Length: 166
Image 1 (cartoon, rainbow, N blue to C red):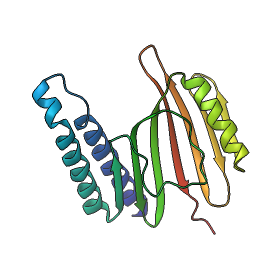
Image 2 (image 1 turned 30 degrees about the vertical axis):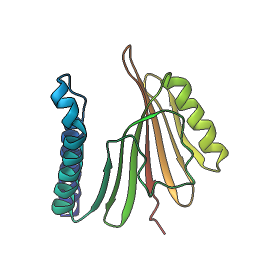
Image 3 (image 1 turned 180 degrees about the horizontal axis):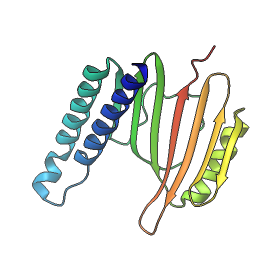
């Protein structure tokens, strides 16, 4: 039953986030551009209420280029434009996902790796293949950073999980 509940919660979260991020994009029509900010706020609030109602969880979606207010100070972040940021609490565990648009994803994720290790996190995995990805942990948090790059997009994503294990 727990596996089914977790899967259902994860599915709801994924659908709501995809909907929010697709609704909060830029529009070519000038009238749409004027209402974009309002629509983005409505999409964020709607997705937050949908997830909170379906899961009993607390969620904070930021599609306006800001970090979640409760993002842990102990986690060093790279320079870049924040594309999306989500803070979520499910079953008492706080998680955050932040995606940055950067000039060079490969060098940015390697800079993130260096800063995270220097901040005292233990590197538990590093993959320098097609998808550059690293996993790090300390007593309080687990971090996954990954890079995505193609001819049009350069992104680095942080996923930070509060470590609730005793």
